[in-house]
Image: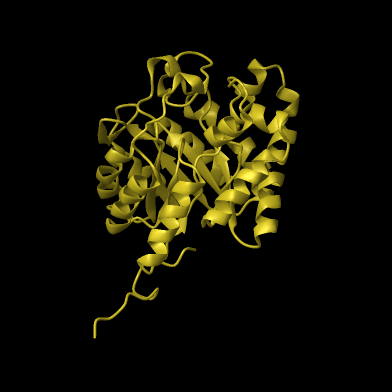
Length: 306
């Protein structure tokens, strides 16, 4: 008799949620602003919790807080720096509300880049940046189970964000964004392999995120050579456009792919798992349907979702 895969045969997988910012922008239907998902959270209270709830219902075991864009430098430009702590608290509350309604799950406090996404050229030096990341981490820590540093585009960014986040006393996961044509490189052009000694100084997991899924397999090969749990969550953009690399961009400068539905995206994810990834999910332009298909595939293959 052929044996059937049991959960004991397959590695447990942490299933992250999908994109939050883009999902919020799509659902709100408002004109995007440089404040991105923060603007939606301010204008539509409760919508963030609804998105978290839909991801939990789809099978995600982690809710990533809507705090990616919550840095003082972003809020100063919009003249709402006084809302810094209240907005971080709101992001935590909406995640907590969704988890309570679902009855299970972890909350990951998201920490995005200072300055702007995909712009290692304007990231501050470590001595200046680390205290700014530490401030965000300290405010998020009481309401989350772990911190996730997202879209790390350079080694300087990695050093600064990890140093700052570790001060909060929570497990820290670090996710790096890659060159969309070369999975061996960070967006800075630096080698992804050179990230491994940095994350070894206190991170609890290392991931690749917010890059096209086609380069993630190469990244998994590199991250597997480290000692930490690893994984990936890709975006669904055609490319990071020149318009998005200007000052104070808005997300309508980016174009979503039409060839990355739930089935095709889940094909990529299952390949990463075959390479040893144990933390997977989706980034910008993936939604609850993508997570639901990944969850279905994981269960069919006998992987417990943890």
